[in-house]
Length: 152
Image 1 (cartoon, rainbow, N blue to C red):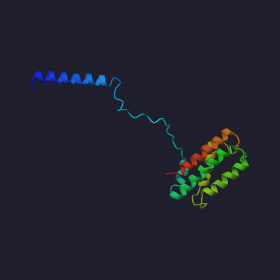
Image 2 (cartoon, rainbow, N blue to C red):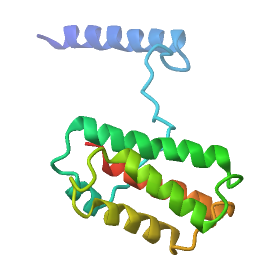
Image 3 (cartoon, helix red, strand yellow):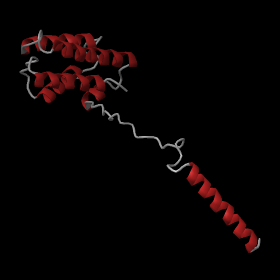
């Protein structure tokens, strides 16, 4: 290849770049980089003791526990402390929820204590007043932790 051909190639290349810049002064609209997903990533918090206690649970059992505690979240959000107002009422609801969640009581030794410990740790006390918005939010968080711990 001689210099005459190099000059011609460079001339055509420059002309092509000039034509493209005149045709697309703002760049190519068709070529877009993917935008970042604005949806925040939600980290599912679990309790290691509950996860360990449920290590041998079947998918159906895990689904049942997750479903019952997810359902309790819905109940608490709808109730907003209007029906379940006292510690005694909360204890009754929590005990009944646990009975619904576990098909065979005693099958997972210590699971009930582990679930109760999540509520005590999250709420900070055993004296629960669900009519208090702050306490209600903590109860919902505890339910989420239990429900998340029953997923794989």
